[in-house]
Length: 247
Image (tube, rainbow, N blue to C red; front, side, top):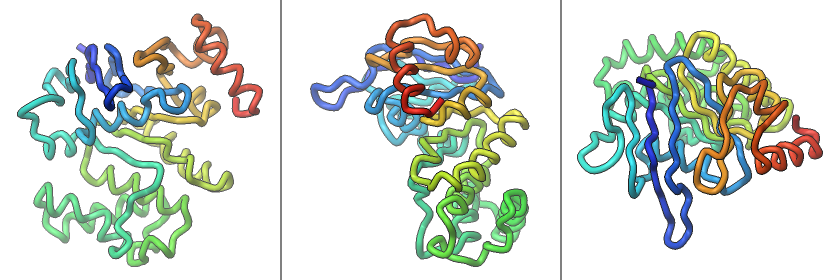
């Protein structure tokens, strides 16, 4: 049994159908990169997995437990499934340390001392322990995004969802964020990434999924997807990426 099973899900916004029977499996320790044109549902899929959006039909399961639909404990779901957004979403009125410790204290009921010890350990790992008392507006975009990743990790999630985490960054700040993702992948963290960083996807992904027409149109290892895609739609999309100099 796969760690994550997304089974024939559908989702619509009014007349617009985002997913039309989309299915996807993710094995434990896999890094799955979601690629596709804007509007194909990459970010929406991650939000559905974290309970921020609802699906109309189908199921999402993690370790066999249903994580979608009526009766699901959303707070429990979000303990297991962390998400990081492209716009950081740090609380501006809280210090870096307060941002990282808030959920462990409020949701996991950790003692403040224990939560702060863990937070400082995580901040040291990304080289930002000296910024613990600073407020987000005193940090660069890359530093804020690294803190956002640490905030998600502080909950000890089984799965980490990364939604276009470099798209709001200046080019020179992208590498410092992607280095953290490389380290997490090497440690075996199960991750799903919606990304436009095709070179990075080719390097770090276990599996690449091309979303189109409300489904996973094609999936495979990066060596196959980026060199010999089987579907015409996938080839056309990647050709545009190549012409734009992004692969």
